[in-house]
Amino acid sequence: MTRLSTFVYRGLFDKMGNMKKSNVDIYQKRINRQYLTLLFTLFFVVFTLIAGSFYFRFYRAGITRRAEGNEYDQYYVMITDNYKSDFWQSVYRSALEAAKEHDIYVDLLGENLSGDYSCEELMRIAIASRVDGIIVYASEAVSMTNLIDEAVKNGIPVVTLYGDSTHSDRLSFVGVGGYSVGKLYGKQIVNIIKDNRRQELLESETIGDRTQIQIAVLANADTLDAGQNIIISSMQDTIRQENATDSEFAVSIVTVDNTNAFAVEESIRDIFMQEEVPDVIVALNELNTVCAYQAVVDYNMVGEVNVLGYYDSEEIIKAIDRGVIYATVAIDTNQLGTYSVQALMDYYEFGNTSEYYTADITLIDKNNVDDFKKQEEQDE
Image 1 (cartoon, helix red, strand yellow):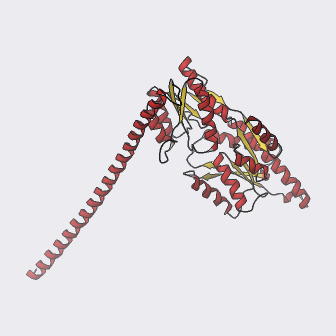
Image 2 (cartoon, rainbow, N blue to C red):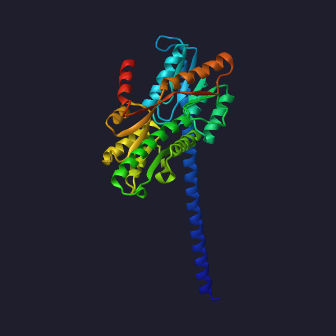
């Protein structure tokens, strides 16, 4: 090998070595940046939770000493997935009213915080704040189960409200009977099927020309809820018990992105962008109900798509009155709030309480909506 060849090869090896070293340096810098970003994120999350817990300790102390000129012996918190909704505001008002009669204050956790917090994050704040009791809209998620168990280990009794965590150490569950809700929905769908039969008998020459009613049940993407499955199963059983054949109806579950209100609205609007829009939409909460009926109006499908809703807000009642919503299941929010507080009070007074509390439900449709409105006016 000549000196020139040796010089050339040595130059190439040096250049390749330098390139390899440069790539390693770039990779190392990238790893360092990612590591620093991760550390900063963890620091920010921990700092937020610690700051939030300290804030609520002082906030709780202030309430316990003096709130609205009264002194309170205990401090409970209520944690929900959407404290702004009419449904949760109604439940909270009932809980607060029941608690005040016994020198207890209930705080709707998150209402006094800037920014949005998940139920899990609010649970951590409540545990760190050492509250006297937690009322939480729970789920079957492992993270929620672990947080409930952590609270109980720290001496904080937990009542699950409207959504349960059956594998946790929660004290009681306060909610509605999923079987009864499903039965109410099923009976309304049977009425829709019968109306469809009558219409097709007038328009079709043979029974074979009957169309299948498409039913879409809206289910939140982050919900692991056995109660939801009970509602759907009960609904299907009720339809079959009323002599409706499988050829006359089909049930599908549509997953709704419930990250925020805008995501819910977009998920439901996507249903109306499809080639085949369902004949019936079953909504299992207030927000899904409102978004579904608004989409029906916006896409000019009033009378074509029947919405079966949940809760009895003023907006939903008006939609039933106008014929946009077929029917809704009204829940006694007063009982939900009162039972939640009662469960915690019983625990402190007697050392135990009932494991289940069930609130009453009522169906509201075009036949009784006027009576319902009159009753609401009298109650006010």
